Image (cartoon, rainbow, N blue to C red; front, side, top):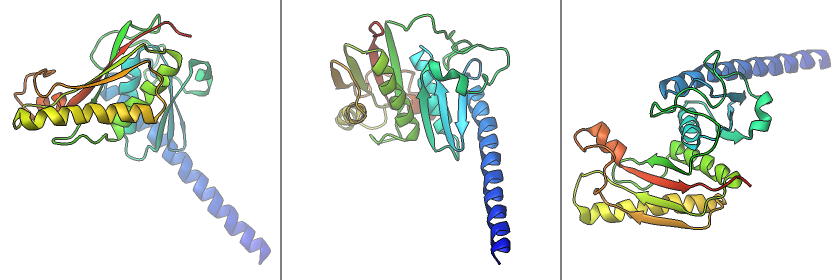
Amino acid sequence: MPVVAGLLAATVVGGALWTALRTQADLEVRGCAALADAGLAAGTRVAWSGRDATLVAVDDLGRMTEAAAALAGIDGARVVRVADAAEADAAGPPCAPGSTPGGGTTADGTAGGTDAPAATQTVTVRFASNSASLDRAARARLDVLVLWLRTHPATALKVGGHADNTGFDTRNQPLSLQRAVAVSEYLRSRGAKAGRIDATGFSSLRPAVPNISADNRAKNRRVEVVVEGSPRT
């Protein structure tokens, strides 16, 4: 019986390991596909350990937050974290062959790079209609920002909440402020190191795009965190 039990145990362990490896391989493929859909495949390096993804940091904050959100949106992904560039050897090659970390294009189509962080950068998180709750993608973006602030101390974060033009400003104004406060409180809860975090609600008065379609209104239900950069410490 002990021999039989040992064989059964080995079979179970071996089966579980094979399943884990297949899951990781599947996530690697779908991770690169998600980054490609976001225009971020070139130069983005990701290491998978089971269901957990680790991004290799670059100095383009917008690129990192968009990549984290794309990976967080993959069904089956459990944790998305960011590693310092010193840990790059632990990550796989970029999704797009021949690209270099920090290169390629960002989500808005502009060139990415690691020469120096911009003086001012913006992190945008979006919300469901009539909601101030942070979803998984929003939290992933903000977690990247928290890590960024550890090596790029900001003198101030300006957190601006926005709403689409659905309904009246008597509702949209407090909702936009609630969104800004939700982001500010989340950043503080995660230990964001910033000299000041100001939260303001702008109602529907500053749309990112015209409110002429459902897709555009979804883009306007947002919080923009303006990060005023400072020298690396």
